[in-house]
Length: 168
Length: 250
Image 1 (cartoon, each protein chain N blue to C red):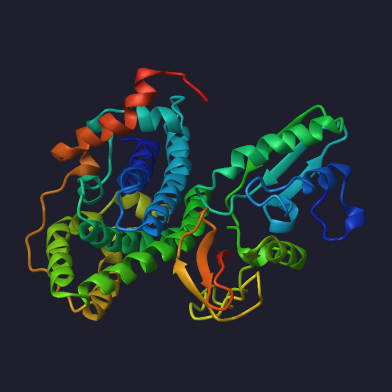
Image 2 (cartoon, rainbow over the protein chains, first blue to last red):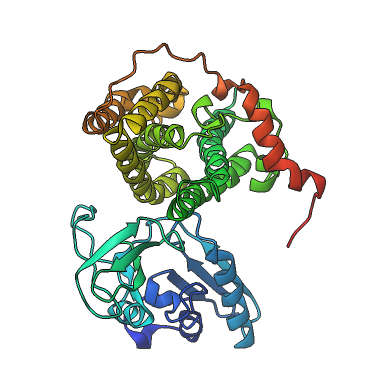
């Protein structure tokens, strides 16, 4: 059995690379690997692929779509037997998001999450930078946004509303 | 009673609390005082529903009779539900909804924090994830309770009334659960959470210029399958579609 959880690209299997390219259906500029949703891909010598993904939030409705997209992508790449498992532990955190994902989110108009404190707490007073104009003069208009993982903000400088990916 | 039956009952209690609360949260969509609040309460309900789904699926697995999450949610009758009375009663006043969310989410937060170290891998997995989500629910409810309590005379009076209405249902959350499950490190014993939850709630009430209600506890009995009149109406709405069109999918 080949395990593909290493951090070095060369050690990862072909199946990992295909799975890693699947986009998040609600944030279609970042991949599930960028977000840290993809946890593990194993491939046995019969070509059977087992994928583990973890939800960002318990009720994240994108998980079913991600699962279907993974099976489609791997099946199209020639893997005949693909199964996807949802794992809950360890709990997903925004700290697993890659720097590339943060850059892509900002370019897409979503302010990326702050790093969490060492004890897991999130300082609530940190300013959020407007992804449109870069101003730090912004205010939260609602703690809950278009999806569970985001909050709604308004920029006081350019007056644009925007989403902020909450630290979790 | 076999050990599995007791675990089934314990998991079902946690699952039904989250499921029924989620159903009540969903009622607010299009009815909250502002659009952002529709979205917020829908999201809070969605978190709770996600927790309920995993817990129900696990309960079905523990029971071993082939019942899945949908069957447990949609095809059980009132007497088979194990949720507390706090979450099931109708709330058409926004202040009541926020008072209830403050009590329920503070309790859930302490419970999940302790359950994250459960010897049961599924329960610790669910709890470790949920505790972070519920922290946002507590924060949301606290902000509203402070804003309304320390607001106008009208909002203060209504917030205090709401708190008085919900307070009798707090005690049921702290009823002891199966001692063997607690001894085995599987379950969290609710009486141990009592003082911490109360302190946290009282801190919010102090900031909100509200007083701790001096009211008698409600009888309760949800964990034994005895429910208030409103539970039947809630289930009728929640289960109607699934029971009218069994096996339907979309």
